[in-house]
Image (cartoon, rainbow, N blue to C red):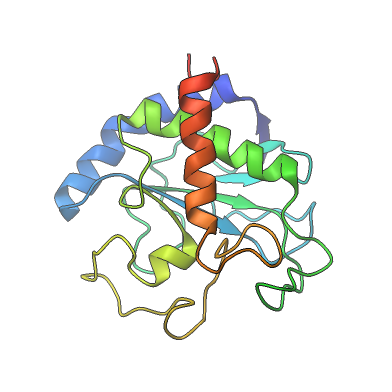
Length: 192
């Protein structure tokens, strides 16, 4: 596990771009970015994701090559990059995100990573390309070739970032993260 800054994220993404595009093209879909929470503690990181985001917004990579296959999103791992926030330990519901809910710093760091990755991969920030695990689980991108729905709208098995904050409107998490990603993409020098 190695801590990086956004300029390093951009460089690593640039190196992986063609490989990710080749794999995703073979699958007949675009490069994907999936956003998760770990369900663990703030300083507990996992190798199942390419990027881990710490409590204070620190970025940690588990590999120098984003083409490395990681087991993060059921039947959606190839041609994709996974970001996970180290949080949501003992989260129970959209009204109880547990004693370690997502922090403001994590939300902003995820949004900045979304901006850098989408700019580098030349993909838009929409729910066809950037999805929370909750959205992917319920095939919110309209691509049901890979699995039956298993998310919050159906079986409720995966609801990572279905909300950002306790009491948010269910299903608003992805739009909030993408919206912040769009803002960073157009209003900062983080992508340059």
